[in-house]
Amino acid sequence: MFEAVIAVCLTVAGGPCRDQLLPGYEAPTEALCLAALAAWPPVVNAGLEADGAPFCQPVGEVLDFEEVAEGVFVHMGLIEEPNRANRGDVSNIGFVVGGQSVAVIDAGTAPWMGEGVWRTIRARTDKPVSHVILTHMHPDHVLGASALVRGGATVVGHAALPRAFADRRDNYVESLERLIGPEVMLGAGAVPVDVTVEDKAEIDLGGRVLELRAWPMAHTGADLTVLDQETGTLFAGDLVFHRHLPALDGRLLGWQAVLKEMSGLEIARVVPGHGGPVLDWPAGGTDQQRYLDVLEADTRAAIDAGQRLGEAVEGIAQSEAPLWELFEAYNPRNATVAFTELEWE
Image (cartoon, rainbow, N blue to C red; front, side, top):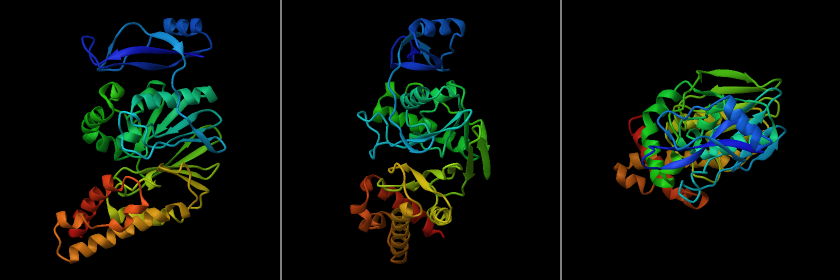
């Protein structure tokens, strides 16, 4: 199979540059791919400059996905911080194949990941990618969406997602350019959210219904879950972590309450935002619930003891350190957020 790509640069005069996938021009031969380009000339992303004409090449890099239930596929990201070696491949991505179309759940950190998702789907089915559903605004779940959007997908998210992402996008991109490289992040622009969910919504992929639910502030203020009704598979986004220490960017007490409610859901399995790639439920959430309970208890004890924030952070939840990966990267932040929340309760 062949696909169409175009070299794009921040400016023609000087990089960074990368070859950007042009979704929808896939063909069994180079000649047919070129004919499609001639018939339907592509549009380059706003803010980028084309370095030459589009061309066709053999299909590029795909992402590895595991079929965790019939028609449900998950790519498991590494349990690492983003760096140049992993190029931001640090979170889980899913897709569900329906009778008429495909929905993608989260899109990774950088454009190359969304392109890899597109290629994987095209290798399995020619059904259109109708939706990309974003479980929250963090960059490792959102910034790979551009290729899927160019392929015609409707972007769906929590009602709070557009504002939350817009407020942070520039900082996210700037930070990731330092961590994984400006050329890797090229094209990671604004992500237009076409459909927002205030409470609950459904997406019919053709005889296969996905149930979307917006949750109160928990991991973040824009958490959305996706339930494949056919298999009972819940994509929890970062409401559920496994192996990777949970990262608190919302409200501790809210997250505990949401997890308690989620534990009563009648579902077959959960796909966490990190780790897994699938967990039995509710057993798969017990480690996280324990950590959050320890985080709360230790924070309350520090406040009751009259400790200042800087002193308290050094001791809060340290008993959990041997049980999680990336503990030192995230626990101080979690303790800070928890202390700030509970101090003024």
